[in-house]
Image (cartoon, rainbow, N blue to C red; front, side, top):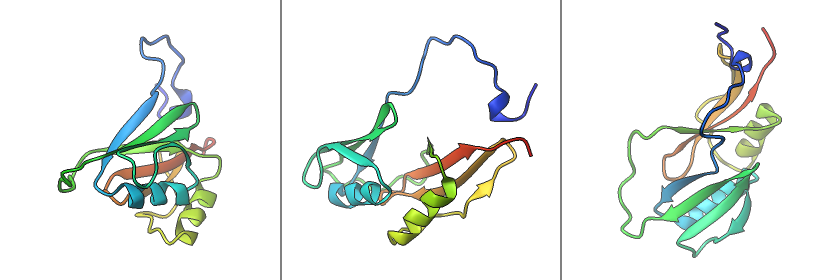
Length: 133
């Protein structure tokens, strides 16, 4: 068995892909500004909307407003976005005044990545497969 992601064999699965991920936000304008600063293209909604949608490759990242303003959850998981250049995305985040949680690094499972939290505490990872090391 290969330990690197690139070596996972193709197989037919009943679930073909993730079409969309929807995250809850307590402040739509702050959340929209965060994702736009990272280069996400807004397709629907925006600052005053209860629901906003960004294109992510062939899928979507959605934001849904929590009108009750529930407190942030301490643990929830992570969304991983593959990008062409992890280091360039990290520089873009820093240049926009955002604070990534980690610097770009090569992981033993075969990805270069960095983590950043959105204004609602959702953890994002921007990653790219790396060649054999």
